[in-house]
Length: 91
Image (cartoon, rainbow, N blue to C red; front, side, top):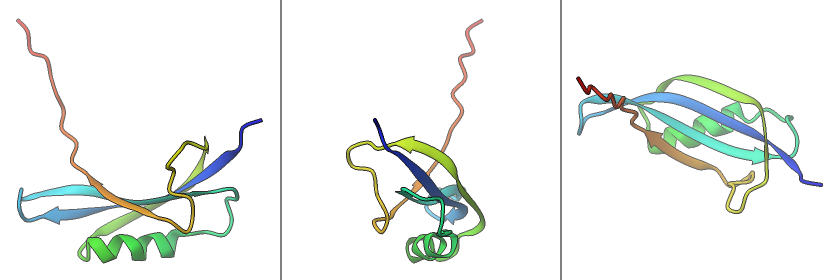
C-alpha cells in the first residue's frame, strides 16, 4: 500500500528586474493531512526570497504518492518558473 501526501502550494507573481518580466514563484510542501492550512506559512517563506511577490493563490487539494526527496513539512521548497511557449512553425 502506498501513502498519499497532500500537496500544499502557494503560487504568486514576482517582477524579475534582470529579464524585465513577471515570473511565477511558488512555495510547496507535502504532508499526510489536508489540515492544518499552511497558506500563511508558505506565503511567508515565499516572501523571504521574493519580497515583492503578490497575487497569491493557495492550493491544497491534490494528493500525490510519496517520492524520494519530496519536501515534506516542515521542509519547504521555494522556487520560480519562467514558462515560454515553443511553437513549431513548419510551412
